[in-house]
Length: 145
Image (cartoon, rainbow, N blue to C red):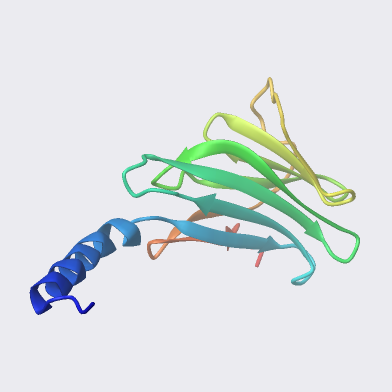
């Protein structure tokens, strides 16, 4: 059975009306490349619904072909809160997002919460995950590019 032109127009308008809602969702990944594209820390942000004020976040520690692991971290807000990345040892980095700290290691590709009681960085700042031109990006620290 054929639908009427009016019914088709109503369906088309309904679909078009949903596009702005669906377009507002974020699904992004940006990487801090350590030693080329095979060794990296990757921040992933996913917003399932536009009306949700919270995004799922994950860190991927990757050192291919040896290991790669995705670990969910605390949710973020729709506006990316800067995540600073510091050297913390051999194949080990400390990441700070607001008051939260994480340790990420690429020896065995592990990520965990870190209770940094002193709140001080353990080493040199290598860069930050930030919003750049409206999209998440990794920006190297000055003099570290």
